[in-house]
Length: 300
Image (cartoon, rainbow, N blue to C red):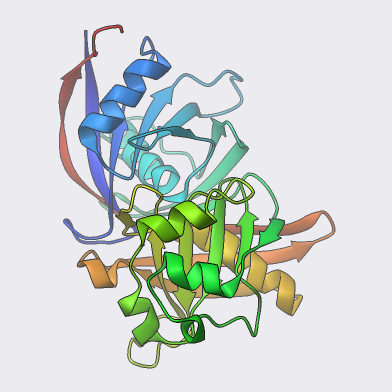
């Protein structure tokens, strides 16, 4: 049996920018092991698999895999999958709903679609969980992991801290755009520091964006595989929630990512303290790039 797939570049309005995503449509019948092998074949930061919703009131059950593991939630797969599904429905003559609800391991992910002609232009998700804050990391250890000097780490607003709104990251503020540009993952430094309270990746950001008008934050995200992610919606939402919690009010940020690796991305993040916690989300565009079919991998 063959399965249809569509690839999209997410958090961009131009092909070959943003963060690539593979969406495997109608993935019913694939085992978790087969999904993992397909994700490893695409070798994108994530691949999503669309399955029938377990609750008929929801849109779909979406499973998300990196090249080495399944993750409970991620930002760019939700934005990209929503826009790809809307494209599929429109091509089939089906009405496109204003809101989608995806079932994921971390919980329900609600996504609002902004439609227009000739296609959906933008999707905005709300993370499945409010902000969760865990341990903090020593500045010296973080600097070593990022091949930086301790003076490059800005702990004046918050220390390097593990946070999550559905997927866990170590969030680190850097003192300058130059420090962000110089950052690079160090394998030994990572091994000494991570995993920490579930965090396996470091999301580094700076508010020094005077040279990059149109953004409030510039960011980079380095994984435990020593790879860089061009756009990380789940980490952006978590970092925005952390800053909103510290300031005690609604926060909206325009976040640039992927610039230093030649895949410029733009994410629109929001976070709001409520009675039951700080809730965050992220919005962006996506562009379909390729589509085709693939065979199911042989069972192990």
